[in-house]
Amino acid sequence: MIVRRTVLAAALIAGILTGSPASAAPPPCTPPAPSDTKPGYLVADPDCDLDGTAFTALPGARVHTGVRAGAAYRIEVPQRWNGRLVVYAHGYRGTGATVYVSNPELRQHYISRGYAWAASSYATNGYDVGQGVRDTHALIDVFRQVTGRTARKVYVSGASMGGHITAVAIEEHPRSFTGAMPYCGVLGDTELFDYFLDANVTAAALADVELEFPLRPDAAYPARFAAQVGQIRAALTGTALATWSDVVERRSGGERPGFDAAFTYWNAASQGGLPFLFSLYPGLSGGTAGIAPGNLTDNRRTYYRSTDRLWPTAAERALNKDVLRVARTAVADPGLAGVPRVDGRPSVPVLSLHGIGDLFVPFSMEQEYARRAFTNGRSHLFVSRAVRDVSHCGFTQPELRRAFDDLTTWTDRGRRPGGDAILSRHTVADPNFGCRFTVGVRPAYAPCPAG
Image (cartoon, rainbow, N blue to C red; front, side):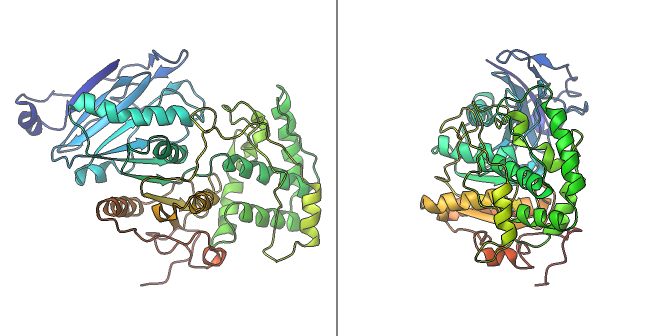
């Protein structure tokens, strides 16, 4: 069942569209209501943001809101609609019990260009990519039901975990979409959790601290791990710290400009009382990411490098001898259960962006997708753009707008837009890597050459 509401942008537009005056004010916010599909969940009012700000239409547009199958949705349609729809997939929102819908970063741009958009809260939180795919794809039909119109072309776009949802959606529903724009996305599925494992076990080995990886963590394990992290941080100084930085750089995308600043930025961040990278240790959840049927992580065949020399150094051999090895007991799911697999087999053009200093969802996610697309003979359908930024999803509006416009031009005219050669180690290591598609100068990076 769909519960819905419609709000007009302005009295004049309301008169044109409906022949009747618009409401004097948007409906008042209502408290979160119990989900009708997921016991224990609450669904926040889609007519309001969490801070109580009312969601109202942009000038020249009309909005529809409601709840379908335990997921809140928002839809906005410009008066001069071009027949195209963008469905937006939001990122990870923790494991709280309240789901809520929010607007895409390119909301204003979509409306100004004549595109309608739709977004879902999803019916669950957590790293539930499968639910995100189901609820995001369902927006296409919700749009048809509440507007009475059918979109001629549908694009899907999502950030962070929403990028994972985007990549899975176009493989799960290859005929539903015209193009895809993930950004700062988890395009390598379980490779993300392997990276979190790598960062932690190499730090422990370099600090000579014995680390555990319990498949079923007991209640006292988080406290034990926090104590181990304290020992690691105390010992990880000087050469050991520099070596760890070099290892993380190679596991997160290779030598590239701005990495020292990125490493400092993420090491200064904290979460749950732990330094950020340690707070992501897969052993804290038994490697399940809170949703898989077992441990997803594996480093038995990973050979850690801190240099790009042809042959490993004595220090690299010692590190690989000492590091904790972990074997997976579960894999990425071929469907929508657990952590869904990304095959890298797009059926439509995909244009992606990623910050090269992002160490939460690292740049290596782009490279993993590029390798899979190449293996599947789909490289011609994937374009990746590197942006010189150390934060997670810290793109500027011009960067995102240009990417979206280039994607839609690609799908209309068949001309593949420009991107970066992200699988070329020498290109990635160039001091000017990322300059082509970065708009503005971030503090961690030197200005790009003019021209």
